[in-house]
Amino acid sequence: MSVAGPVGSAPAALGRAGAPSRGRGRGVRRWTVDRISLFVVFLGLPLALFLVFVIWPFLQAAFYSLTDWTGLEANYNLIGVGNFVKEFQDQNFTIALRNNLIFALVIPIVTIVIALAFASLITIGGPSRGPMRGIAGSSFYRVVSFFPYVIPAIVIGLIWAQIFDPSSGLLNQALIGLGLPYQAFAWLGEPAVTRWCLMFVVVWGFVGFYMVLFIAGIKGVPAETYEAARIDGCGRFRMATRVTLPLIVENVQTAYIYLGITALDLFVYTQALTPNGGPENTTLVIPQLILRYAFLQGQAGYASAMGVTMAVVTLGYAGLVFLLFRLIRRALGSER
Amino acid sequence: MSAVADGRRRVAKGDAAPAVMSHVVMAIWSLIVVVPFLWTVLSSFKTTREIFASPLSLPAEWQFSNYVTAWDDSGIGAAFLNTVLVVGSALVIVMILGAMCAYILARFQFIGRRFIYYLMLAGLTFPIFLAIVPLFFVLRNIGLLGQLPGLTITYVAFALPFTVFFLYSFFQTLPEEIAEAARVDGASEWRTFFQVMLPMARPGMASVAIFNFLGLWNQFVLPVALNNADPNNRLLSQVMARFASQAGYAVDFGALFAAVVITVVPVLVVYVVFQRQLQGSVSAGTLK
Image (tube, rainbow over all chains, first blue to last red; front, side, top):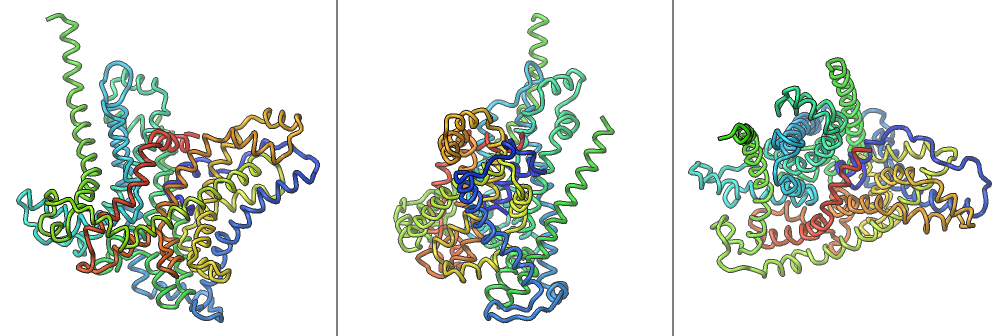
């Protein structure tokens, strides 16, 4: 995962994640000193850094997951898949895994539906006569909605933690102002609602970004397509679901995968909102456990196994989404 | 009333409902986005007592002292400078190394090129917290754990795949004729890169740099897990995390809100200045 974050890197990288096309290389050329030094520095330096600080730790994590290494001493024993067996007997782990999976099911779909709705309103919600255009002031809405994306997630979490505060929080105060009995409702202390508050915050943070992404996708659709649909008597809602959606299904897939990857993490948000796992561990997530086991409880091997498990879950999730969207595309293809 | 005017009015009426609804929905969402920030700014000028007694009112007296407290006592000042230092140097290094690596991968044929490409893809896909435990020990072994240079190198390494991917496609689109011309004129490979190809890649570099800046400025897991040795080395995200984990009454809430504002301002400035370009980059990233 790039430091630029799943979202920052997402659309750009995934769009061209396929095999590298043939370089515009100059074919076979003589290996001059100039050329060799270029390769050594230009390729060797970044690659060395990348191997030592990214790839090597990944490989090590895979190895340590098979050991009982504490992280405190140098020695360890190979224990095979013992850590992985232990994971599924560990209630903390199963609860956290279930939480992460719930987040990965809910957050992407909610974010995408809202972002798509907003993108449609903004791009094709305008007058039904004249050239296709969005509602007036659409660039204002775009700029405002996108704004949370640039705010550090920990800060977003902190702000919302204050808003959810039972006594001094903006939310309860506003509800009281409306005459509702929310004097001391602990949004982040009630098992039934905390999880939803957390998900709301994440969705709040990402809707604007994906809205902009989808707007870009919609703008890429030739105007004639929409005009033809309009002449055929297509209304705005049908336009969004029957014309727009099939045409930007690639963007939706990208969004789905990266939101899913984000939801399978959520470490930052939980650290800000519910650092101890939330009421009855309803917001406990795997990364919290990994850091807890690795650095506080001296179970580095076990923590590595959790990391490996999550990597597998993440890849599996991405694979499933790819499969799902292939089916969707096929269905759409036969429909048209 | 003429038929034309009548027709126009009917159309306008038919359009009014969706337009109004769109505006209502988007206006509500804009409020949901903006109000939390306004409330934060407002609260940053209040005393802790005021924040609890009257959370919605304007401050009785504007407490600029919160900002002083946050900057000095909470360590925001030092953390701010540390963050600028780490993010700034990591950004410069990763842009240079990323551009060089992408250039080689995009414009030269050699054995192992495809392998390196997929390795980068793996680095982009695998979750960062899988690497975090071994990374801790890698850094400790080379004596850079909890040191700002160690954190900087780690930032560079993890930002590298994204940078390379984005610039890879950019370098591929640059015309070969110009590189060829430079070579014919006798420019070395090095000069061709620095004086011909790199300047041409400037638009791509700008987009990636903005994304990298935001990603690195907002980075959380790496500093929280790897940078605990020396309190003087803390970054902004760490100070924020400490605020979050402190117990209720120990927190100076005025300072907390001030700290939030101080953290947001640099990204806000970058956002406002580069807003158009940023949204353009999002589009460019998807449409290619």
